[in-house]
Length: 264
Image (cartoon, rainbow, N blue to C red; front, side):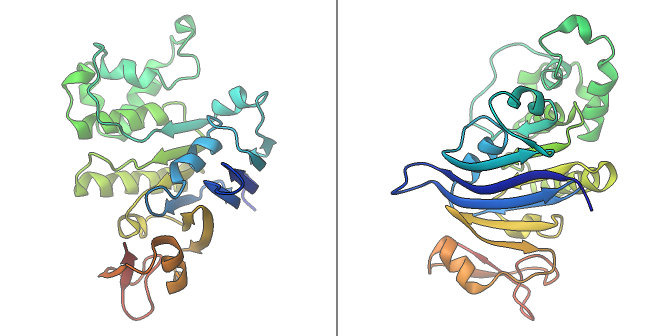
């Protein structure tokens, strides 16, 4: 049995009369690639931030790598977590080389005298996202898609046991998105890394992930690969105004015999 990387029990966040997250329970093991989907305001980013130890829940319990996440264990556990934050629309102003941006993901970034052997790790992370040739380029000169790949390299540079991603395909074209999802799939398979990714489009991720958690304040369904997501789950997440979009019938969420996904 694979090691449990994230175990959440009855997690809640927000006021009791109108919680943002309510009674969330999940267990995600090493090597598992999970997608989280749901409408805007469903609490997806909040859940990712709580798992990362950046926000404290109002109730429930979280274990990371078999250890209880507390304010005392948080700093040590974060050394085993990579986090790609949601992309915000702003231009970087400080002159930094691409390799220096990636170095910020290292646990010993604040102690540069300990970083003598980290250059290879930085170049390896850049190679994973096809950005090694631009290691010495000014980060400000990159396109939005290139900057997003550098941010991913920063999240990967310490070879985390858990990688959290909040809409990582933002600013990427469809080819780059597919390459990203294939890379994450390979890392989970080859290294045992666990990845939890927030995405809006289930059709884009469903052929790559092991499971999809359907979130709107609560987890309405956790669908494993090959499993159909019932109509009432889609309605609970998105309301009655949903459309059916044709897609590969072998993917998570497809209706039997139709090859269709529901979208809001």
